[in-house]
Length: 241
Image 1 (tube, one colour):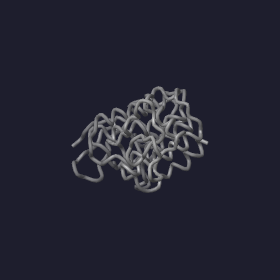
Image 2 (cartoon, helix red, strand yellow; image 1 turned 90 degrees about the horizontal axis):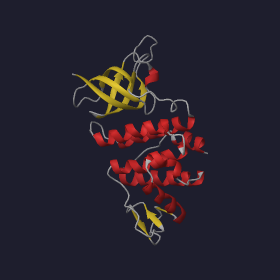
Image 3 (cartoon, one colour; image 1 turned 180 degrees about the horizontal axis):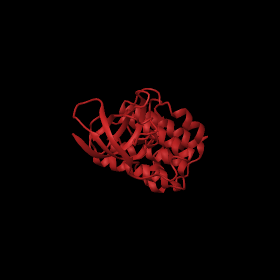
Image 4 (tube, helix red, strand yellow; image 1 turned 120 degrees about the vertical axis):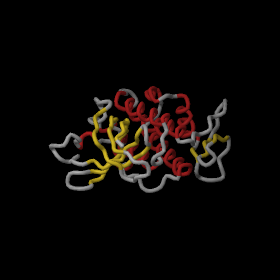
């Protein structure tokens, strides 16, 4: 059956001389794999330049429930980006986010609220001109709510440590090493007061971003069973530095 759906492109692998298999998070069907014939052919309407991390697509697909590999009939840009494909800081973050999403999002699980958040976030990453280096940290933090693992909010008056395991703030150092130190906890608390559109207000320096990224990934591994190497992390760190 031919279906129409919006999609957020995540990743592709080569399938043949001219075809690819594209990973897309769709509005209607959750995360799906699509065979895209002719994507690497100059004569095809489904050109390879449509398939870049976090590109927002308007799709026509052949969908059959339970099938591991679907087929894509047509695709066009739903929202053409002005900056993301050409800005190395933004494109590196998009690549990293797409890889994390592939690991976190379950196949064929529809979540309209999550899709809307991701769609809006991709648009903000493209448009935002202030605090771009903070986007990834704020995104990973906000995403936890949509994945059902949001951290407990800090108590009035502040706490000294954030415990990654219990997902809560504490006055005393936890009896294990999976926590944020005092300075990192203070920076982490800023994220509770900041929307993705306000990342320019965050007072992060490079060292804060480096530690927060490491701790947020550790948090994801604990609460979402995030496994395996994130290949784009090395590139991202080089760009952020």
